[in-house]
Amino acid sequence: MAYWTNWHPWTIGLIFWFFLVGVNAVHVKVYGELEYWLASLKVIAIIMFIILGILVNVGINSEHRFISGEYWRISGAPFVGGFGGFAHVFVTASFAYGGTESLGITAGETKNPSKNMPRVIKFVFWRILIFYVVSVLLIGLNVPYTYPNLSNRDAVTSPFTIVFQQVGTAGAASFMNTVVFTSVLSGANHALFAGTRVLYGLSATKQAPRLFSWTTTSGIPLPSLLATSSISILCFGSSYIGNGALWSWLQNLVGVSDQIAWFSIGLASWRFRKAWVIQGRSLDDMKFRVAWTWPWGPAFVVISVFCLILIQGWSSFYPTFQPIDFVSYYIKIPVMIVMCIFWMLIQRPGLQASTETSQTKRLWYNDLVDISTVDLYKDEYQDVEFDRVEDDTRQNRVAKGSFGTRTFWRFYYLVV
Image 1 (cartoon, rainbow, N blue to C red):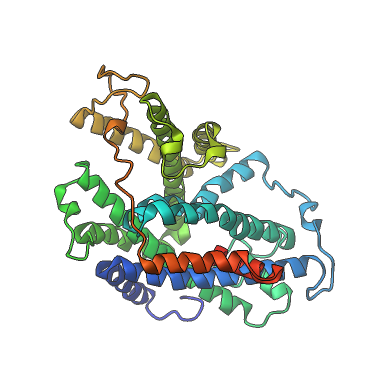
Image 2: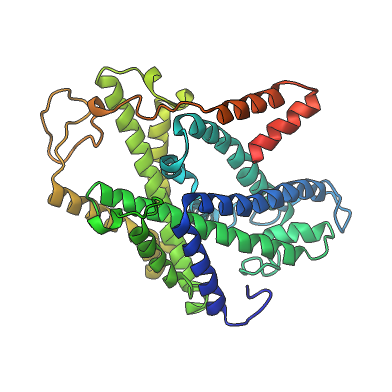
């Protein structure tokens, strides 16, 4: 907001905080509707950016110059700062990537998840490839790392804004600031939803106080929402305290948290499928599975994320040791270890290891999913007439008509 006005930034922040808490306190449909429109603006902006980025690179820019990979060959590029500079961006990339893992959370409040969630998950791969990888590639091609004040956190020097300016777009900074602003609202909206559901899930499984599992008549875990949203108040002053130092700390903490989440997801996926097979079930019986990533996928996630967590703080060791940066990179590791040990000491979970079919217990090494109690048909859903008509319409649109028409509808459903 400081790009447009300096009028009481805390007041403006509190207004939007109350707005987002109110949205999440009403009904999950209200959250979904708001997220849909906020995300739509981001998608439109990214599509515009990709098109303009390609045009700028091939010579349609204010200098009428063919750029190609020129900026990757200037002194120090493309790996500025050597290995330490390369490793330093891992936590920032994890911070930006965070949120995709919460598809598993939204499945709990999605109609017919066994049918709709696989469809969404399949699209996620292409959305990441298009909206993340391609846009970052175009930024690297069109914006040199030597661009003045590139490290500033304002709309004028945003790499997205720079590309818009290169093509001669008037008001590029204001437009991108609008996109960034809505992206912040979207991220906050999603964080409230995901954090609330995680806290509720912990309470429901007796890993958090029982209070947090209480819900309203519309199914909103209000105590969990209030607890999660109260933490976000601490973030309001993050960009004002210590000349942005607090913001950098929070970004590192969130980025490492996302990495730990993916480490846990990879480990849980491997353990779950291993137990599933050993206890006499076929992987074909699962409602949804990605066959081409098994069995190497979970192992790749666990090993790669583990390596990222260890080496991303390289810049805090070399060339000189920076204790403050070191703590921001690695403090979450002992915190998570202590929390796990504390949970084991308090609860002493004693289920069988996945490699054993008997009830023989191993010391603190347990399988958190007893496959013998899993109901394969618990999620089964009978389509109503509206759903059948909607699916038939979708299939007809992507299968019939001219090549251009089919391509249009495929792209439409990919984005929307």
